[in-house]
Amino acid sequence: MAEHVILFAGPMGAGKTTAIRSLSEIEVVSTEALNTERHVVDKATTTVGLDYGELTLGADEKVRLYGAPGQRRFAFMWDVLAQRARGLMLLVNNDAPDPLESTRRFLAQFPALVEKGAVVVGVSRTDLARTPLVHEYARAIAGWHPGRTIPVFTADPRSASHMRTLLMALVANVEAAELLSEQQPEVA
Ligand SMILES: Nc1nc2c(ncn2[C@@H]2O[C@H](COP(=O)(O)OP(=O)(O)OP(=O)(O)O)[C@@H](O)[C@H]2O)c(=O)[nH]1
Ligand SMILES: [Mg+2]
Image (cartoon, rainbow, N blue to C red; front, side, top):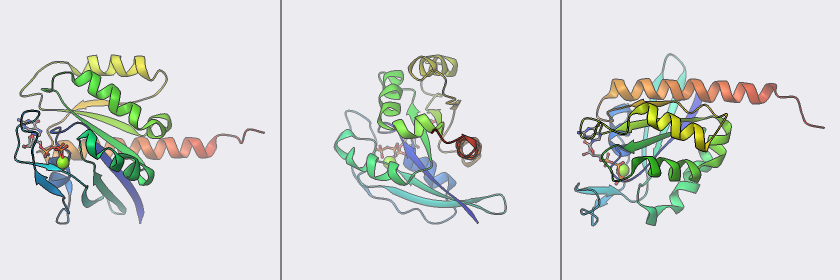
């Protein structure tokens, strides 16, 4: 059975934990603690370690889902989790103060996955804030990472079918990127 390890990263409140709970076929392992930053994002709990879930895609692709904490004070976990990840699902809450700048900063945290072409961006909470629009993200990302294919979708992390569509796009991109890199001739 082919196996994928996908990391969900992005700012606090983007919906990483919610997305993994929507997608997982096993009971999700979570490390939620009381949110002491309710002035930043008004929700009861926040991830302090990681989330873990699993699902199968098609007949024989197992996907391991890891969710990172969003808060910068837990940023040491981002590198730990990125070392294992073959793909990055970057979730960004559109109702945050400067979601484009958050996108730029989070992409800069994961240069190897960006370089490999193994990233999909999901813009959440678009029912609460309509803008920036998807094409504005796509244009900004093309400016920061010219020549890289980083698809952007709107996504509701509460919806399993939305998240499944994004995940399938990401897995397809990861597989294509890995096949391409195998075909690259060795540099003498
Ligand atoms: N209205 C609306 N609510 C959403 C949407 N996406 C997520 N939410 C809600 O926003 C909150 C997101 O919380 P989490 O899933 O804990 O976010 P997180 O990214 O794991 O946050 P941290 O672990 O604190 O970094 C939840 O209450 C979700 O129900 C959306 O598209 N629209
Ligand atoms: Mg979380």
